[in-house]
Amino acid sequence: MRLWDFHNHQSGKDCTLYNLAEPTLPISSPCSLGIHPWDLDIHWEEKLSQIQTASKSSDQVFAIGEAGFDRIKGPDISLQKGAFYAQARWARALGIPLILHCVKGHDLLLEYLKSEKNPPAIIWHGWNQKPDLAKQLLSFPVYFSFGKHLHQENSNAAKWLAACPMDRIFFETDDSGLEIDSIYQAASLILRLPVEKLAEQAVFNWNTISKRKI
Ligand SMILES: [Zn+2]
Image (cartoon, rainbow, N blue to C red; front, side):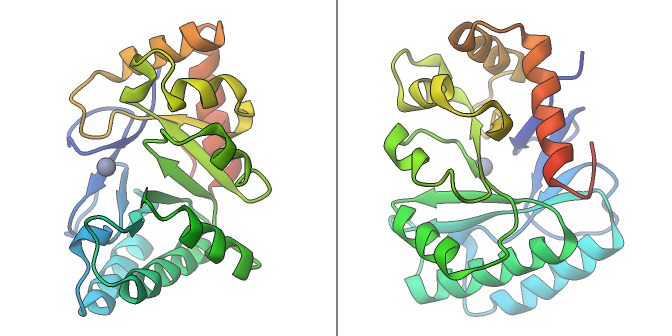
C-alpha cells in the first residue's frame, strides 16, 4: 500500500514530496520547491525565477512551497506578502498546489484569499490550530495536512481531523523523524477508518486539485 507523505524534509524516500531547499537541476523525484519565509531576503525575485525555470522544466515539482507567513521568525511583512503572492500566482499558473507555512499569519492568509479571485489550492501544512480557524477557511480552496500532532490526544489537529471534510485532508511527517505509517495509524484511530481508505482518499484529493498527478 502506498502511504503518501505530502511534506517531508528527508530526501530519498518513496511516495514522498520532499521539500527541496534549492532549485538545483536535474530534479528526478517528487518534490516541492519554494521560498520559505525564513529564507526570504530582498533577492527573492531572483530565487523565484530560478524556481520558475526548474518547475517548468521538471514535472517532478509537484507543489510550490513551503511558502507563507511567519510573524515570529520571518522578515518584514511586506516582503513576506510580496513573495507569497508571487509564489501563489506561479502555483496557480502551473496548476499545482502551494504548501503553506503559516505561523501567526492566519489573518494574512485570509486577506490574500479575499483579495484573490483565482488562488491555487493551498495546503496548510502541520495544521494544529483551533477548529474554528479551520472552518473560516473552508469557503476557500484550503486543505489541511496533518502530522505529528495527531499523536497528542485532544490536540487541535486531532480535533479538526475528526471534523474536517474528507476531501480536504493530507498527511505528512515534516521534520519530525516519524514514519508516515504512524501518522496514518493515528488518523485511522481518530476517524475509525482503515489506513487503506485514508491512503486512497489522500491520493484522490491530490489528483483532484493538481495537474501533476501522483
Ligand atoms: Zn516543513
